Image (cartoon, rainbow, N blue to C red):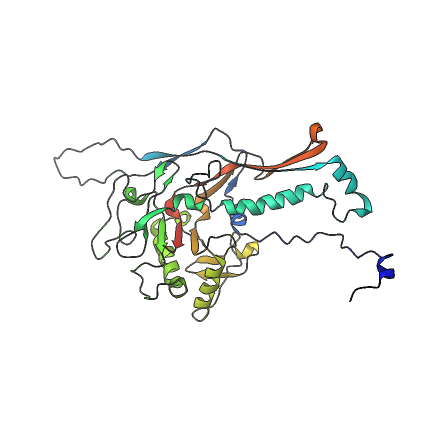
Length: 362
């Protein structure tokens, strides 16, 4: 019911003197990287380079009175990435500040500038984690997940797609630098079976929801989700160390809803509350534990997509003393304004793409 005119002429509305931010979303990946100590600051240099072991020496059988072969062994390649650079610029004129002060200011825009810009930068940068920096137009961006997950088609046996990306200057294709994979005992296609480390040292798993090899005939995520996730977690453990194990599966929100529906009638949802760097310990409680990994839904994960992530094998590197650096206020006489910037200069580096997997529809 509208008030009478004589009331509105002498009465102002009630305004809340606090801001309700309806734009910020809870996102777990940066929290996990931080909790696991996988953010490093004050890095330097013109680019990121690190040695990558791709081959091993060969064990020889020694027979009496035969010579021993002493080969020169090349074990290493070098990963190389440039730095990504982001900036969020903003200004506030002197007149803006004069108007937005005193009791008339519901939100003091100048005094809250740092908190507001850092919060918005953090949220928007989270989406950069999915970027394919190899695509034209993505120059200057970090090498996000999709950088190493491109593929060239279906592999035999109908479980995976064939990786064909180039990450850090090194091909992700299977067998690109030699090696062999066993074809005995029905294990005719990677990653089933076993083989030389050289064969797949830089190759991620790319699981195909619509593949023909799954035991469940209905070719949808809603039907096959459990089998696919367990396949990824099982074959992701071809690296024997704990650091080589996927600990989180991040799903598109709709896929996560379907995953929970599928799992609800089969087993109890469990959480590991005592683990310091688990999603649950960080406050993300909508989690399903499967085979020792936490499966959850993340806003921003692309449609029809999921990622098996090993945060122990990632490093989010910053050239600055903080991940996001606030610069300002800097007075600009030509505009009679204060300028502010939030900057990020850094890169997302993997020990190897083989420590991660993707689930997709192709």
